[in-house]
Length: 232
Ligand SMILES: [Mg+2]
Image (cartoon, rainbow, N blue to C red; front, top):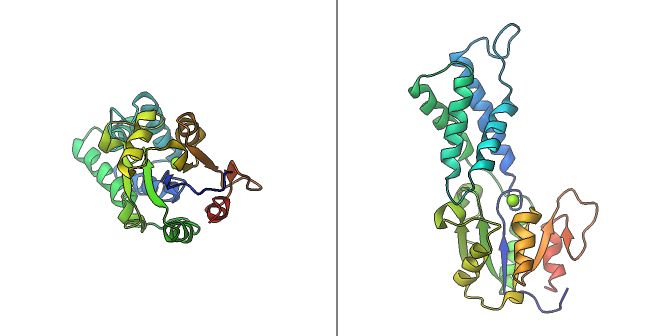
């Protein structure tokens, strides 16, 4: 790693700065409870079966066919929930709407960032490093206690581009006002979305793998080591 710290660090959001799956899984549990009001013997002996995991699988299948640049995640979620309801014979559009409301009332509820986030942001900012968020998702920063830190926030659904398209990396660089690629660093949990496109543009990039046994220059298992890695 070069001695000179980057002018700006661009963070992925979901699974990098906060654990998105906690609220998602809680939201799916709420949807299951709502479905059970329509189908009281749901998942009981002799009753119809719809595993909670199937609710997410329906979403994942639709998302794979609809990149974030074209269809907002919220619309994909609505379609997935409607399909889940239809699998149980629920055709009432009011119930479909209610499932969507139920899901998002929990999904957009308050949550907290990972423990290592705020101390790391504080150190980077204190050293004069510009900070940005670059996400393909629709997480609202103020709901996870992460508003107020950023020199740039680029969310795919708002700009009509999505990672791994290099254009969205160039957009965030532009908004940060940093023209020199080697002065930019990308940090994220997804190699294909966060690391490979950044390196291809000449940025530095560090893969966050919270399951990794140790941290190196290329892969870290906690954000706590990032400032040290950057010589801060
Ligand atoms: Mg991520």
